[in-house]
Amino acid sequence: MQEDTQTLLTLYRKMVTVRQFETMAGEHFAAGEIPGFIHLSIGQEASSVGVCSCLETDDYVVTTHRGHGHMIAKGADLKRMTAELYGKKDGYCKGKGGSMHIADFNIGFLGANGVVAGGLPIITGAGLSIKLRKTSQVAVAFFGDGASNRGPVHEAMNMAAIWKLPVIFVVENNRYASTTPMEYACSVGDLCTRAAGYGMPGEKVDGNDVLAVRHAMTAAVKRARNGEGPTFLENMTYRMKGHFEGDQQKYRTTQEIDTWREKDPIVRFARILTGEGILSDEKADQIHTAVRAELDEALAFANNSPLPEPEDALTDLYCHM
Image (cartoon, rainbow, N blue to C red; front, side):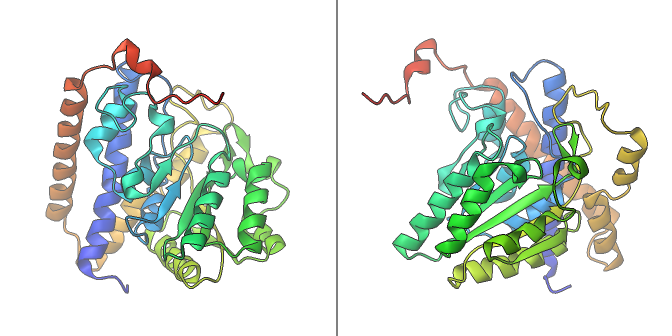
């Protein structure tokens, strides 16, 4: 492994943080404490952490309705993030965005988006701004295999290619667009082959291997920063939970889920680190305990945060006359 020990442990801790945060969110949503809907990415932690580990604070990211992991991996404040899920005033969007619309421009996170493929035009615009301002930033779009069939994706890829924008398109292929199998809905077996139609490199990556994701992303980021244009990465992964919390999952079998559970990216990475003598049982316990303590603080912060005032509903609104 090329990475140093501290980097490897940081990757592990980030994945554990994403997993524990989403497990916590699922439990408190089921208890009726979190309003609206939440969509969890449990099982996809290697993709979010591997990609974002290659980014600087001022690099741009957009994501989807399943974006908790991406935001945490980019460096979000767990307290403000939890408060936002709870619809509280101290949340990232003052409680108005909820799970599907969190953003933090201070870390380059331009937002989650409840509209399928809605983030792609935004990130392409961000990529254009980078080129016009002549900075070394890159812009990353996370989207799913379902979104890959929608028009905005193809328009964004074409525009990024012809203008050689520093945009990296990351499709997290978790096999299902809501409840529709990828094999049924997509015209090709490997979505990365579509990149050739836009004159950009496309690569299929083991999305449950955080190091494989990191290495593919490192090359894509280098290419973008060098002015060589966009890259398309297809991270093959799987969500262990339903499309949304409460999903009865009649579209897939328990056996299928159990098969993928054996490929759990966190367990897999822990096994590698243990084999290399980097992670011991004691060290793993310390990391899990420390993350739980952080999340306990985040929960306390959210519970103590006030609800928005009714009149706050009219602030941050803009009207074109």
